[in-house]
Image (cartoon, one colour):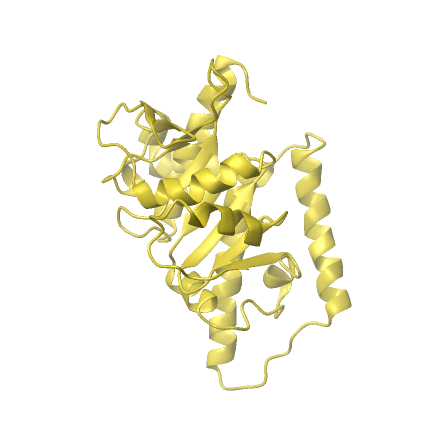
Length: 254
């Protein structure tokens, strides 16, 4: 659990970096969708997390304008003064209250992600990217715009212990034991969706990987991620992302 000022500053920096990267990759949706990060519990034990201010595009999010909310949706700290999106709170609070292994929750509405979430087959193990997610994807049926707090229990039940969820007819939801892990999952999930759309769009016969090969590949990815998240190995991919953003959007750290 984070408990030092420097840890919280790093968390804010990394969350702002995630917003900026999603914008840089064209995976944002105007002022909608959210990336959240769990903070240390408040003095009274209340769970708290960081979310983007409502009304800002992802490329406007910085470390200093992130909003702190508690598990009830009450704003604890709001430097920008615009509050947060109620639908964003519904989905993210559900996950953060139930999954203490998830530091970050990243939700997107990309064209590719929405497309794959809108077909019953979901994501097929067609390539190395998508094999990472073999047997590791949960599904939640669409219930309308997520304003009903009662939906939280159903989201949590459908998610179970998985880190990847397709919100049917809606988009994707990704968890990470760190912000970096959630971002890496999201990038590869988006690539997988795009590759599937491209492959099936050729009108040829898709070559789905055998289950054993896909599972082996998923395990290889998992061990690599575990080395960073559990064993403290360096994460050159995340460091490369931070270097990119320091060139392209240096204000994110402010």
